[in-house]
Length: 111
Image (cartoon, rainbow, N blue to C red; front, side, top):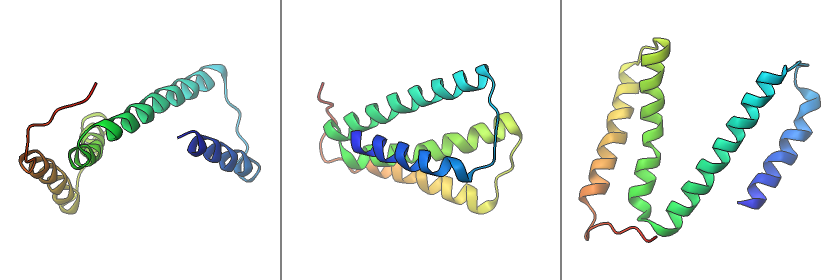
């Protein structure tokens, strides 16, 4: 995970000169820093979950973030979902159900 963070920062820093000029105020910078910290925490939590939990179930639950993003898009910004979007979301939900039912033994999380 450390190498991922380092390489992502190096690539992002190398691309800065090619981006459009921008001027950020202090609240925007603080919001971006907070977003980075929350994202780091989520990545660490996800990595630990994949290390100790059932991979098939965790992978299907990870895809549920797409469904939540679509839900928030509809709820907060009034997005409309096409038939293909709804079909894809239903496949994500179905895969989660199959992963839950397909477990041969009860799921035990190591702590």
